[in-house]
Image 1 (tube, rainbow, N blue to C red):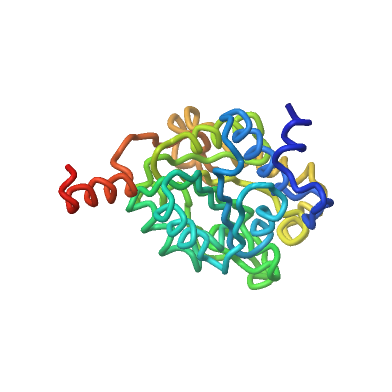
Image 2: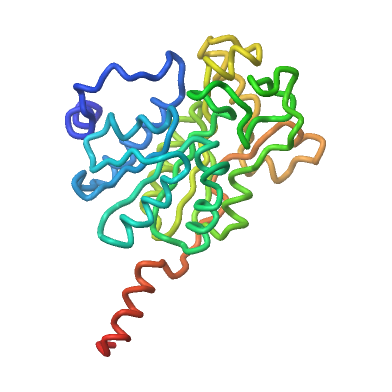
Length: 274
């Protein structure tokens, strides 16, 4: 299986990657490729779109149709691709800042429209590539270059934002819980409608060092393990027990009309063909 994935889906001449040792982005890439492999998709029918940042390098490593766009605009480009050719499998990968800071408005309205795109958020709680600044998901108390004494702002919950905006598939996984991440991404890709997968991952270089995790990959993964709680357990916890924790699993999976199909039906009516 893994030999097939390397042979079929990777641009081997682009390796080694630029990601730091211990970065979770390679784990997410592996989960994505395994999910595509299990679905048996034709790579020529896949478009992988990214914005700017460490996650933005992902399309360069895969042998799909790929597009590296501007900061925060991955979903805007992905929308245009899907509307132009609904037969394509469109996937957008974004960092947490890329997705819900400068790209926040695109995120909300892609969810509202229920366009058949899978959005994978590489959520490492910091602007990793551009200097280690506070991002919308930086936990309270965590240090960053723009918060040397600790962040005092309440962070965005990407899952809650996706649920509130109307995404029809919403899940959270992590770069620690790899087998579950494989399955979540596979379900997200197969879902007809806007799918959001919030992946809690590590940035040992700009987040780990500033927050006393050092750049040790194991300590960074242990930090994820300690923070994340399965959804079934979360539902039984008190508010006090939930402090500093995040639930993970599948939060929503529902079937609703998808945008490109609605446009196609409208077009047929306008032409008098339906």
